[in-house]
Length: 403
Length: 224
Image 1 (cartoon, rainbow over the protein chains, first blue to last red):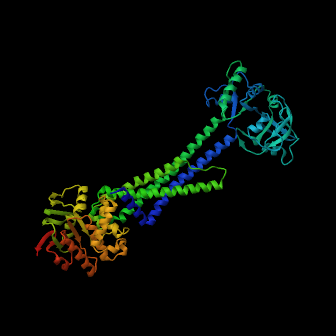
Image 2: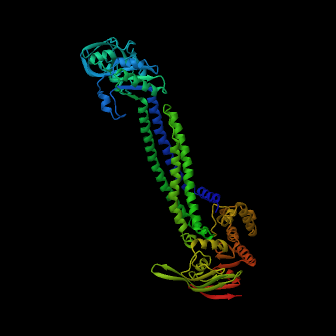
Image 3: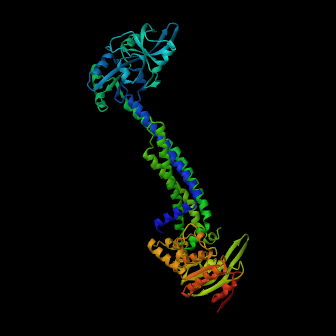
């Protein structure tokens, strides 16, 4: 029998029983559409998150004191900064002298007791410079950020996070008020826009002051981190080498800093979301197996409905293998048609989601669509074999009698 | 052409074994016109199925064109059916979703004939059974007599040497039945061996050789 004839015969049978065809198509289409939609969501989330991180500054290099032996393994060392030498403001200034570095922001972090009139609370204090605003893409709610002075100059001003402002000042205007932090007092010059967690800190719950003031407050000559922004993404490896060389030279030839790039964080998120997307695809693929079982049932019904037709084919000289192929072809045709409808529905759904949430770039990856169609066809094949071999084994005399 | 030697066909029905065919000996020459008559359960249909290779004997030997076909594997039986035997059923057994032409083409499709050749051949056959104007009709658009003529067309499209007809007029009114019988007899005159199983005494009497069956045995074999 010719392949085109087999296909033709299968399609004719599919057309002849619209209800059961519709049921199987629906089952397969739901499975394929589920894979397409879920992976589109996963992929959309991945692109969104990595995009947001990229917006935070893919050009950023974070310099921390202490040498981590291997990336990621020295977490404790990174936090404590166990080294003989501190990273200082002069180091930060030295880093800035490189022409591969656009700007730097040193960072001192500590915690202090803040009070205003009768109200007081423990608060995270961030010492940094005016560059931090742009590097972290923070926005101001009112007032100004830190003054653009030399980083070694301490001045008694501070910028508050949104939640801190509301806790201390309620609805009254905080600008110009004097907030006491530890032993010093500083004037509130600005309030950050509410943002929640951006990057490593919850900016709603911090007080920001000039880095020199924070060093004085915590009585430390060192800084916790230096954030440096490279001029371009391409220049980052060179900038990194240069930073290490500069600081090593300043630290009597000892390489006692670690430089972390945003790229590492970004690729971690990338990997995490890719895994999530794959897991979603796997879950959706289970529904394709369920659809395969439905195809098997539908084909078993088809075989019993068409018993006398099978008997006739045998009487006309059809071999077992021919009947097997005919019925498997019918099951596979059902799953191919179902997969095509599923792709159409899934992609239409993706289109709608993109229209409703334009911020997120929903798009099912090609591998997911390919895998969904592949699994649909394979399950049609696998689950079609049992009913087809049942048909092929029928006794012609009994089959002709419709039994 | 067909030779049955000591053929038995037993069926298990509950605890009992029924001898549908009981040591049957039968020899059929090419081009014969044979009717098989007998009461229900006498083994007529079993004999027909066995001759048509749809069924296998429990014991005995069946020679078809000089070849022992009683113990052939399934695929070779299918091939022998395809080449040598045309079936005509009481209930036509047309495939409802296919047109008259496609139904007639079906054996050629199964044998892998090219679309062009099989279309040509199927049209010839439909012309021969007088359905030139009906080629594109589906079975539900045809009368009973026309359906049986399509079925005859399908049975002879592979040019078999034997036509096995099981109550070919059983579902037809007498006029359509007569047309069908006329076609079958004219095919027989052209040389095909025709074997008709029937309850209809009038139809049975028309055959040149008349077999009577009872309890799985051939109890009468009359030639005109």
